[in-house]
Amino acid sequence: MPLILDGKKVAESLYQKLLLELSMLPVVPKIVFLLVGEDPASQTYVRSKGKKCQDMGLLSETQLLPVTVTEEELVGRIQALNKDKSVHGILVQLPLPAGINKQRVLREIDPRKDVDGLHPENQGRLFQGEPRFIPCTPAGIVEILRFYSIPIEGSKVTVVGRSEIVGKPAAQLMLMNNATVQICHSKTKDLARETSAADILIVAIGKPKFVTKEMVKEGATVIDVGIHRVDGKIVGDVDFENVSQRAGAITPVPGGVGPMTIAMLMKNVTQAASLRE
Ligand code: NDP
Image 1 (cartoon, rainbow, N blue to C red):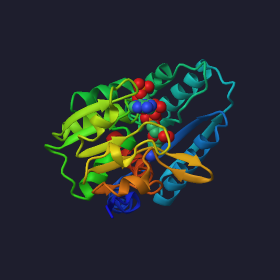
Image 2 (image 1 turned 180 degrees about the vertical axis):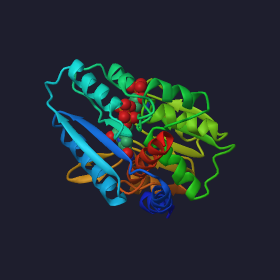
Image 3 (image 1 turned 90 degrees about the vertical axis):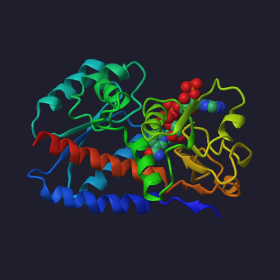
């Protein structure tokens, strides 16, 4: 059996450190979630983030907007939150309904309140090696690897997926940690050849159980970002049972990257409040 990389355990250890940091802050950090429409997965994500804020003693508020909201109305809401001194973090839950320009909306968030790390200023800082807020999922992946002392420096890392929220920043973080990095995507030729070269394989494709053991090097570390509900069960982008026969270490789904995404959001909100004080 491979080493199971337990994201809940890593998150717990991070929460202990954060609670100490929070106890020393002169303010209670506050985050506002903007949730547009009624997508059930988005509702669940926002609920779990809000619940974790409550557990950690952070303030959170969810503002619900109808699916018919206009881009201008949404931007107006963001501008009001930018001005509100009691709000330290703003998170626009993605995806947004068709017809709303996501890039423009994200650009309107004050970069010092952009706790998801998606504002171009924060993305630019990350790519220049001077990050302020790092997108939560890739930041969580680095924490998992560090917690389990899996060496990144000098390793060959393959990231499958090139989204702004996971793939690209994950690759950049691995590069910053001195890995040799390649990014694969839907146009990659012979994906299995590329993935089997990796010491660390990070998979963020959005296709259930897509990665099989034939695509993984013996003893590799496999990080599965995917989340899907299939026949009432939550599964990842990696075929866990099958890949476990070959991987040296692997994140389960659920209980791997997911809990770390929320933990890193709590870290970013705490950081947003401390930046302001
Ligand atoms: P996107 O849909 O934005 O990106 C998917 C990427 O995978 C694209 O770059 C796409 O390539 C690539 N891809 C798709 N099909 C293939 C293929 N057959 N071979 C190689 N590459 C392929 O997804 P996200 O990055 O937003 O999310 C990925 C997964 O992670 C989803 O399941 C999502 O639910 C989950 N997720 C989980 C989080 C967590 O907290 N655990 C947080 C965020 C996301 P191309 O660019 O060429 O189209």
